[in-house]
Image (cartoon, rainbow, N blue to C red; front, side, top):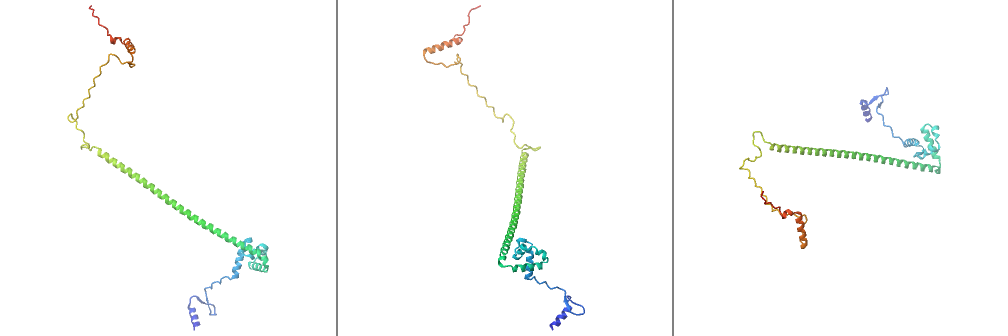
Length: 253
């Protein structure tokens, strides 16, 4: 009964089509391809490893690349060449396989180290790029802040100048006398009553009487009597008119 239902439903389905006179239905959708087998994956890895030459990481491929490069010409088909490589490799004794196994192991280690180094360099490059981008962003932000501070300082200086100009203008306006008005500052009243009396100048002091004898050029030394007599003689010789003024003649003509 289930088979009848499936056949009847499939006949009504748009995905079902009748093929020829046989009357059997076929699906238009194709089934997914099966995944590759282990042997297929191994053959693909060996084919990719063959291009590495002496740096091959599979021991059988390394043996073929080192000792039998002519197989690439003798067996151009990869499937046949892969069978030949595996056949010869399995036939080798263990002591002959050992050096190729070690070299393949070393090649794998070298490739891993190279990949790790490349990954590290890539990571360092990304970090350096991120650091440079961050430094550039910080530099731009700092430049913007400096520009804003400069603009603010210029605005403050401009405002201070404008304020000072306004204060000066207001002071000048207050000092000016408006037309038809009284002066802002009271002028002193003119007149003799308001002006203070002039102060009389002090009288000059009376002069001391002049001595009949001029001041001596050299001071007198009152020592002994001989010194005094000598000084008197010198004085009489120099200024006799001071001691004996000329007499007037009393003779009548």
